[in-house]
Length: 398
Image 1 (cartoon, rainbow, N blue to C red):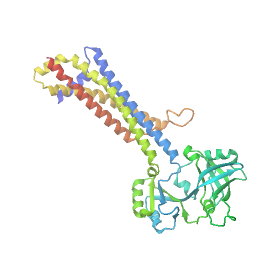
Image 2 (image 1 turned 120 degrees about the vertical axis):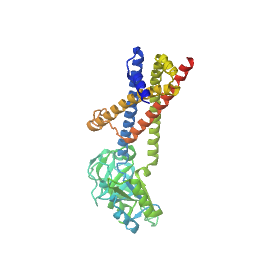
Image 3 (image 1 turned 180 degrees about the vertical axis):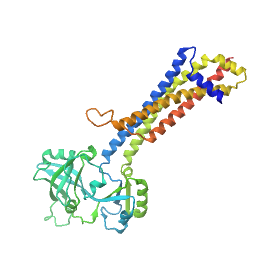
Image 4 (image 1 turned 60 degrees about the horizontal axis):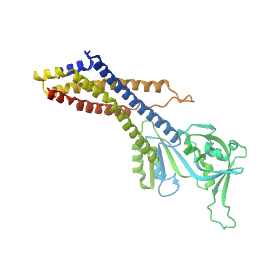
């Protein structure tokens, strides 16, 4: 084995009579390094953009979301929910009440999902991208998505007369006496901008105001938003709560509330890895060329070694080891440079998003590192082993 390693090292890094063969070997290692560098950088950028996008998508999503499966509203006084106070992984619980309503300002109207929130809501979720003030408890105020505000007219923001909320009147009175809508006036105190999906469909109001408009008792809520402690795992807590609460409640994580989104992101990641794997495979063809050129240069030495008793498998292992060395040395250097660059980007924001002062998002993830190592290691081994089989052809011709 020592003989094999020494011979492979000499063929890989030693000086040769034919400078072209040396240059081809060096170039092969360089190309593999560039491919691996690009592989890890692209995966890191993809992960960073995914995290960046999910921060906005989940800005008003809790770690754990609880809703009733039997009734439209949760009874917050239900004894079964006492587990939320005793579970050590749970930090805070916020009650919300949501309803689709029509909003009117002067002669313009818009529809939005009005979410009534209590005083703990902003400590449970992470959404902070807003202008103005948040709603005060027990006040008649709103925070609108910028898309909803644009439908009503920007002048509605902080207008002294406020805007009118309209919800169908479901009380069973005689047709002559019944008003078709219940109305409530509220001031627009803030505006948020987190993405089209939320901006054009969502608004927030104090929980007490929404309960009054909907004529819902104070102990009723549409859902409970749960914030976990930083060292907790959402899937484990979700499983434990679901088992305790039973079939009367549905307990969801962020992933569970948006399964299509996470499936799409996973599919995109698989597609990116497949494309980058093809790039690495193409780069490894340079290693094939380097091994074949070395075989052609050293064919007389190979024949001599074979005649002196060196078995064909030993000679094949020499060139297999050479291929691995070229691939792994080049790939290793490329991977180290890529990890260093991603770390510098996260720490010092070397590259910024064009037209802004925001650093370009990247993610330094173990999953990306292991993916690169497995792909490059596997392909390098396969390519080196298949190419080293050319030794048999060289010996056969002798």
